[in-house]
Amino acid sequence: MTVPRFIGSEIYRGSSYGPWHPLRIPRVSTVMDLARALGWFGAGQYLTSPRAKPGALELWHTPAYVAALQAAEAAGAVSEAVRTRHGLGTVSNPVFPEMFRRPATSVGGVILAGEVLRESGIVHAPAGGTHHAFPDRAAGFCYFNDPVFAILSLKANGARRVAYVDIDAHHPDGVEHAFAGDTDTLMISVHEERRWPFTGALEDRGAGEVWNLPVPRGFDDTGMEMALEELILPRVAAFRPDAIVIQCGSDGVEEDPLSRLAMSNNAHWGVVKALKARAPRLLVLGGGGYNPWSVGRLWTGNWAVLNGCEIPERLPAEAETVLRGLSWERASRGRNPPEHWFTTLRDVPRAGPVQPEVRDRLKTLADRAKVWA
Ligand SMILES: [Zn+2]
Image (cartoon, rainbow, N blue to C red; front, side, top):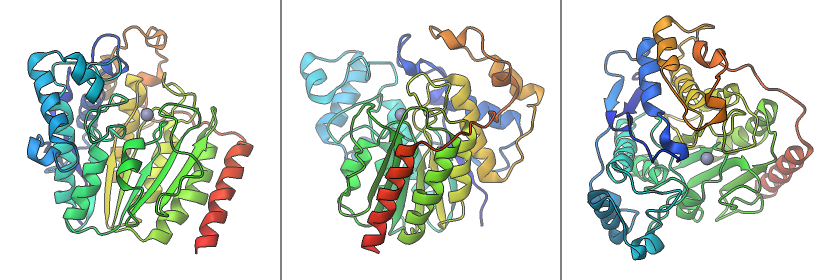
């Protein structure tokens, strides 16, 4: 067994979607800096992400869209026609300086992940997870759909059956669009109900391997533990995957500004830990996450879980300096961050009674699985 690999890039450092956009904050660079400060990159573990070439991107995106995105980056502007046709230059998918190179690097990273995982192993690519992009269209802060390329690359490199588990607060509409009809791809999503993109209904089945659990606001660690035990682990076990991809968006934690879910990072780490040994290949992606402290601490903790590193109660000074160096402009919670955002990775767990809707929906899904068994 080789050591886990981390795929990162300096392109994410200082890159911003613009001063008012939720993605004005640093994320991947924080994880890289924290992991380095904690001594969690051993020899050969950090890999620099290549950038995917247009030809590779056209395996799933349309040539017209790939060209439009390149042209928009070069010109720093889009026409009205391009905005309408491809969803570029909008409030959620703005024109910004690295708008082609940055997402193309995230795709290059997950294609590399598939190659690294040719035999077996573990890869963390926190820049990945942009699950809302469509073949001809940007949406929901996503330009290219790197989770789709992650699954395609794993399959091109020898994995026949891939389980995709998405615990972002938002439903992965672009990934479901790509694989709902494929019985060799298991799709599980736990996401907030009645939230954009308003897809991901409990009733969706695709060709038989689509499992959606919409959850109400306030869904916490206990709810995710139940979803893990009653939905994620049984479905993954029954599917017998050659590879597992986890989209580990951190926007379902309580301090995130874009959802009303109430998990702590312990919930996410629990899912990653439980899935770690369930297939010979594991790829953990990032995803949403719009509080710079929450997202940096959560994804760094994922790397600790994957390596079996002990997460210290109180961070060493060098790691604390990384967290104290972050700022969150134009956000009320950025004004007076609580002390533990600087001094810890682990949140205080958020447990509570499981919501009745969660119980009922898990039973509905379990009953469906029984019928089909
Ligand atoms: Zn999200």
